[in-house]
Image (cartoon, rainbow, N blue to C red; front, side, top):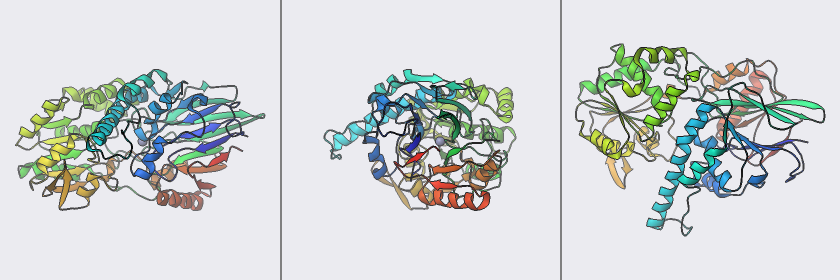
Length: 477
Ligand SMILES: [Zn+2]
């Protein structure tokens, strides 16, 4: 009998990797082996170490990969899979492929840098420390990507076919609907990947891509994310609060610094700023978008008009590409980045990484955190143990580049910019299903979030829901 095995994102939010084997014999090569997502484990060391473990089956026995979206916790292990012998097609939407084209080489580059750092400081017990894969190896793997359009059916074998449907999480994101035909029986499997916001634009503004996951789904078995399984986003429009923060900061002669992931979140935030500026709700102060990837990310975004919401279409037809907006500057070189330090009058700086774990945001914060006129606005999730978490939690100082930097600036957080549906939104989407799945397995959540969502779904919907365990195999009945 066919089975699914959870190779990642079970008990944690990273490392998404789910194997479908059409044959029940463990290690058997006779069935078709398909991987849904191939993400990297991130965060605590205990999980990151799993990036170095062998797959339970040899990568060259996997026939294909279907990728839901370009976040590294869903695609970041692909270069490693190829390095270990996988040579099959990797199916994804055209926008996801374009984003992987910048994100995977960048990930390889960061890993080479990390390995070099550990070797220089002799901090690794592995001698020498090695990158999981290099920039070059990440570029190599891009040749295996195959574009598929949303809703296009692709036949993988006599038994398996799939199509991608909208997930509305980030540019290019999709869910994977799998049709499995074995022993004269046909079954539908749905892998949600990450699920985007369901509600309207006032509570999740700046949504630049297709709004809301596809409704009216059905599946015999569903593998579903549960990141926000025990949380609710604020329900009020964040724009008035954002406008007030920018106005107040500018009036006292300070600057606004926003740590944000260079892809998606930055574009989303720039559109909201532009709207606030054009409607006169914030002053026209200079905006610096400081990231080596930012220009490429905007270019990819501009190319994929099939992904836009009506609101984005309207903004673009009115104001054109963000790369041409007056007063908005994109810094790609380190010199351009350092020049932003010279700006002493009020300005807005958007830079990566979003959790201040690395990148250029570090030097902007080292320079501007000690000044009480400035404001730091967090628009993304801050994981425990990151500098972003320390700053957001009200600590008096934070270590950046080995030095303790006093925190005098105002600190604010706007949770509404999340790209994940919260619990009420997930339930709203699930209620649109045509029929309830026979079994649902929750992945991609901290244990507390997954178990609470299981309880909520069981109670509110009467569904059969279980929390997936790492390496667990479940039969497709
Ligand atoms: Zn994601």
